[in-house]
Length: 111
Length: 117
Image 1 (spheres, helix red, strand yellow):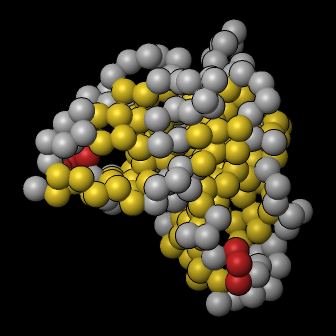
Image 2: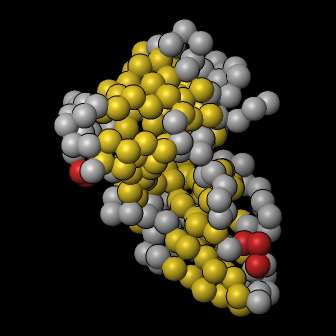
Image 3: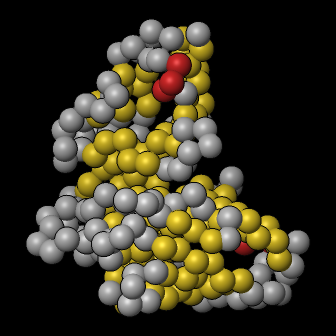
């Protein structure tokens, strides 16, 4: 069975401070990991995926298979980063699309 | 391109009734997935359709069903509604290009909020 855990329901940081959202997963095969974000009154959208190994809006995430983690980091948080963040997992190369989501972390960036 | 659209956006039903939700994917997208979002259980995968066939299914009772039409539009149906079915139902579409080696990016719709009284 696949499972994604986001231990923090709420992260509150000041503007300019670093922010790290934790994500741990359990999956027996080769996973694909994603971070999705939902800004206020907007639909859920992909922020980044581990395969791309890119930085989006200053966010990066590294897949650590040894620790089964995919933490999301940003060195200097901005107020516009306030949103709900979801970590999600899919089986790599799996037939079809099935995302297993974590419970989500709400990020609040204070001025 | 227009995004994923879902209709209706809000729905109120009573226990025992049935409901049909509709999803129109992004033009050219061939896969449609459905998710249920509740405060208690979070986002949970319901099922995925591709080429009018259900390809993946989550752990939901048989009261939850869906279908996909030849134009890739999809509907999901919930019969004999229960109070616990109150949720935001999200639809997501993806391209499903041939020869892909990784999971396609899923593009989500705004959701249909179902309230069961």
